[in-house]
Length: 125
Image (cartoon, rainbow, N blue to C red):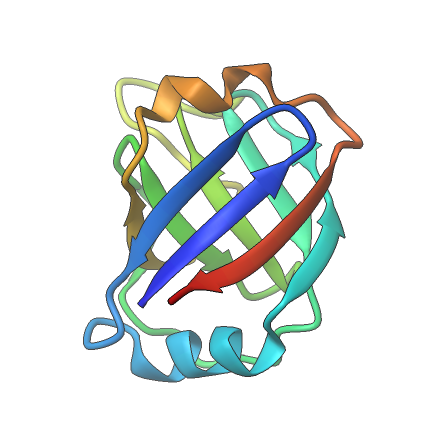
């Protein structure tokens, strides 16, 4: 499955690996389309959703550049395009996230997304 993230300032597509985190991917699919407000935490964009998934799948405390993840405590989708405030030589989310896919755009493209921008998440058919 591919998802399009349409922010006010930029658009990006991500590949979602349904076989890696099938329950998370299914919960995301059921919640689409998603309209939310972007938050920034260093070079991470996250936004609260109505996604209902409490199962840890492919859960990690260190992520890679361009990873797309679901953060269970915040019911949030997360896009990692650089380091967070708690990163060292690794990119670290606030707590473990279910890594569910990868950005297909250049991750640095998201640097221009501002706090409070609206985002629409929809499946690419």
